[in-house]
Image (cartoon, rainbow, N blue to C red; front, side, top):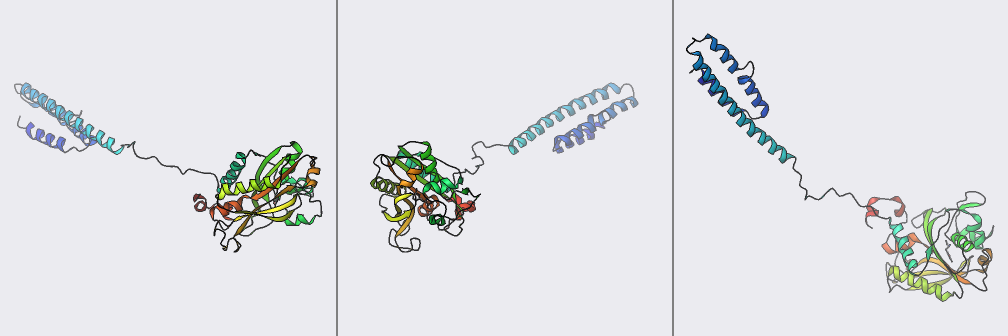
Length: 337
Ligand code: DAH
């Protein structure tokens, strides 16, 4: 019996030392496996005198039971520990904020164009559109700029063919609309336009918003009131507006619209070239030649039209001094808005 004592001591020691399930299984195999120590001890029973065999056999049986019990106790402990370690390492805190994806937003020019459109929608205008590759006829001829007319030179045109151009302004949408609809007509037409020009204030592609109002008894007073309300809605009610006589072939009389400089408040600065005023667009009463081209009776109807640059308005509103920033798409610039 004393022979078993050191084996028992060793087993107790090894079980206590086993720090993982793998190590524990190895101990089990070494003692209780088919070729383990217990099996060997049973084999050795044969060498004992007959009267000692049952006593030794019972003793081995007791030892095996004790070993099994110790093993199972330790196995349970290790399994619990491994589970809690796993739970700890895979722990999920559902109260943590998620990974925030950056939220996109409309480009500052799209936003400015919608602000302009929203104002005119509130005045009862609807939105019209036309093609960017436009017939020379709609872009020039029907707007009282026949072939050879000097005013064509005001717009550095990209020609697509002899009869087609990249539209140089949104005014051809006036013609297209008046050919399809009978007065009363009240539309705005925002869109891209193209001119062969490139510097800090000119881009070969830029945006305009055209406006057209045709009905009976429309006067210069309606035009001035409308644009004044527009400037004050976008820039603030204390911004002054003025009209200067000008020339466009498709309006008579024609004017240019200025607003008080939003940078210096009419005191004079670099942006307004010390005049205190900034030009935001052209306008006028629709010319008889245009009415003739679209076959609207100008004895019965009259109307006004205007056109303004979206980039120009955005530049004045947000203090941007280089038009190219709108199209280079640097995220740092765009994110400011
Ligand atoms: N189409 C003109 C331009 O691009 C702007 C303009 C002036 C439009 C007067 C109009 C207008 O409708 O009446 O320079």
